[in-house]
Every structure is written in C-alpha cells, then in structure tokens.
Image (tube, rainbow, N blue to C red; front, side, top):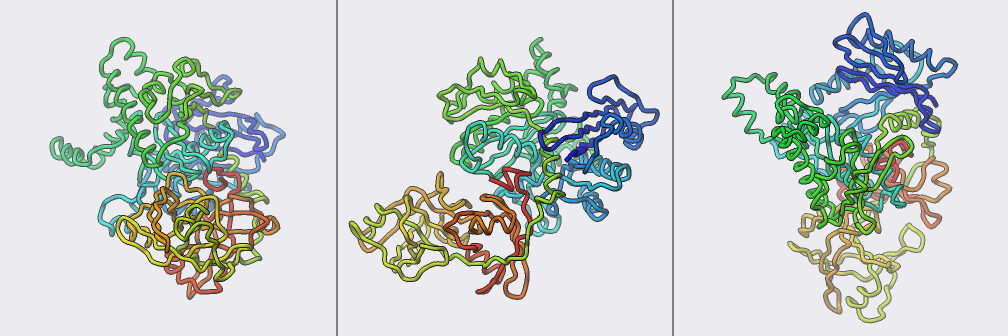
Length: 601
C-alpha cells in the first residue's frame, strides 16, 4: 500500500507517502513556520510560500502539490501520529467522529501535541474523505507497563477519577529501534534487555525487558523525565508551589514556564538546540557547558536505574536527532558504564554517520558484553506499517472458533537434580492425573515453598521434569510469600527471584525461577492458521464466564504441534473475572508485525 503519513505539530508538518512493501518514500513534504508564513518544501526542492497562515492554508496549498508529485499513484490510507492516547487507545485505531472527539478530550494531557495532531486529522479527512484514516499513538507501546511502574503515589480516588498514571511517549520510536537492535544482534527481542534513549527536542528513555516496555521516563504528560529542549523534565513539585507564591505566577504562567522556557533553553538562557549549545560550550560559554553536563547526567542516571530494574542490560540504543548525530552526547552518557559491561569505543563513536544506507552502527568494543548502538529511527515507516496492518485483510482474524479457558493454580516444574535433593536420588514422579496439554501431568508429589515472609504448603509438582526449575504463582501468592516475581513467559527465568523448597528428603534453595505467568494461549500450527496468528503474536481475547464478559489484553500466542488449543490465566485473574469451569474465549485482534516489540515478539 501507499500510505500518506502525517505528523502535524503546532508550528510544522511532516508528511511522507510511503510504499509499505519496501519503505520507499514516494514523496517527502515539510511545512515550516505555520503560524508565521508557511514554507512548503517537497523532496527538498525549492520552497513554496503560502498566502495565508495557519494549518488550513498550509494544507490547502501543500496537498495538491503533493498529489501532483506522485501523479498516477494512488494513496490507499492516511496514518496520523497522535501523541497521547490516554487509557482509551492502546493500539492503532481507525478514525471516525467518535475517535476525533475522544482524542480532543485528551488534549489536557498533551497540550503541546494533541491539539495540532487533531487539527491535522480533521483537515486531512476533509481533503481525503474516501480513504481510511488511522491514528497511531505514541503511548500505545508503553501499555505493557506494570502497575508498579505506572502508578503515582497520589490519593487513589484522584488517580482513578482522572486517569492519572504514567503513560510514556515516543513509543513508536522505542519499539522500532529496539527491534532493529535485536535484529542486528541476531537475536529475538524476547531474549534481550534493551535500554532505548530517544534524544531530540523531546527526550525519553525506555526499559524494554524481553519485548515489553516495563519502565519509561516520560509520565502522564511528555514533561516528566529527562532534560529536554524547552521542557524541564523531572522537577520537585514543591518548586512549583514555591515559585507560584514568590513570583505570583498563574497556572498558565507555570505551564508556559516548564513547557516552553525550561530545559536546555532555561539553563543556557535562551538556547535550546544542542548543536548550538555544543558550539558555544566549545567557545567557553559556562551556561552551555552546564547544560550539557546536566543533560548527560540525567540520561546516565536513568540508564543505571533501568539496568537495575531489569537485573542487567544487553544493549543500550541511542536514537533521535541528538542520539543519532552527537558523538559528544553519546560519549558523556556512556562513559563510566564499564561496571555494567558497556565499554565505549571512542573511535567508533566519533566516526558514526548514520544514513538511509547505514541506519545502524555499533560504538562499543567487540569484547563489550553490553552493545552500544546508534540507530536511525523511522517512526514514519512504522506508522505506515501499522496503518496498513489495521486496514489490510491480513489483520482480519477468523473469530468463529472459541478457545477453552483454563485457570492455572500455583504449581512448580523441577529439574532432576532438585527432585533428587527433595525426594531422594533417582526419584521418579508418579502421575496423579493427566493435564489437558498432551504429555503433561499433575504429580502426586508436592513441595513446601518458603518465602522471606511466609510459606505455602503442598504446591503441586507438574511433570514431566524440565531442564530448569520454575515456580508459577499468582500476585496474591507473591505478596503472601514476600517475593517480587515478574510477569514472564514460561521458560524465561533469567533475572528472576528464587525461594526455598522443602520436600521429604530436605530443603533446597533455588536461585531463580519464581514467576507470575504471562497469560497465554497454546495452539497447534493448524489452529494458528485458522485464527490468522503466528507464534508470539499478542492478541486480545473476550472471555464469557460467570455473569459477565471481559476482554483480556496482552495475551501471548504459543504455537507448537505438541499443544492443544487452550488459554491459561492465573487464579487471581479467574477469580476477579468470576470465570467458571467451561468458560471460553474469542480472539479479537492481532497487530502482527505492525508493532513488533509489543504485538509480536
């Protein structure tokens, strides 16, 4: 498909028509100075000026020029970047009047971004009324944030009433470069812990653990986190109260200050472009030197924090205008990270010149356990791909078959060495009853699980034995035992906590393996073909159980000839949804490859 991608800002518009088969740009258009005298540049040719000002005049003049440039080629759809999706939009969405109104209702969350995004949508829909328009949200990728990461320590009723939580931004960019990093390393993203640093006029960092965003620096709005061009980033909220009193500032005054007059611009006394700041710092300007130091210090602090959250890191990625093009900033952000295993090669870093032909370069030493990468982001191409997937036939899923739902009680898988220590050398499990998945069974044998806080008796062992130990518990069990267990796919036990097990023959301390299982669906390749999904797709499932119907999002697909069709959720989820024996689910959607690090691992 040929997709027109529109990124409409308050003072500029960037548009490209992209062939989604290969990422080829059929035409590029940039409009600058929209509020002054709009200047249109198409494919970097000479500029054309508009007679009037504002977005309407800019679109009225530019879109006919764009269509003339691609004469003879059809535009099949329009993909729009929208910064904030709130709690409503967690995936690309086909735009209609209701969606427009909902985006409008979220303007307070991103006052600098959502209003011009929406203006671009409305004008483009008038100009292209007969083709589909799709909104792709910056916040969608971060919908996988765990509660501990997205919850602010404010009164709960206020959080619930106003949807106050961390949403995160730059999701399209973080998802794109994380996938590119994994491909470059020759690994699946589900095997890696990646820190992605999107550094431009707006800046954010994300911790991507085995394909899921688990932490990010921007919060409810794009103000939180790193120091940015004109935005303050992290700020003691007491400062706002103090300045309001001392300077007699209104709410609008404070909003303008932290959004448009702070960040690099505030520290330097008026300069927000990092290129200019570096140039003046080289000439001895102390304010500019301080701005660089504060900027890099904050980034390095976040990198260390996110490495700690994930129990290590495999790759650190720099992208965005600054991250891709500034050797000095990459140097300052990655120096002294040797303790993490990230060892910068200064010559490689200095020589990086990213381009369409060379969109990725490594700047760590060959022996560095952690890879340092600079990657040219391509949010426009990602938006085009997601737009195509949403409207294309390959997204349509056959929802006729229903999926049996099973509630998995706490259980444990053991290796032979651990079973020997718990039950005696050479002990073999005995079958209590077969399980639904072929070849698996619940054993007669159980173990006591001992945590830092409490212990749980008679946790069932499942057979057959596995190569490594894995204890699957619910969130309720996690708190009862006093163990901080992450949500993981079965078998992914790296950097997970351990516990003490007790059997008839004694106690064993396992160093890791305690997880809360990621809700998932087992299916055969034949099932996958019927449903139109692939191994490791992420889908939504509507479950009818008890007296109500609920939609479970973020459900992992697992495909193997050994499996039998069945969805597994834990006891907490089953109890909360009042799911009874015999409940079934219906597959609703999948994004396939459109958002690889969220919707396809």
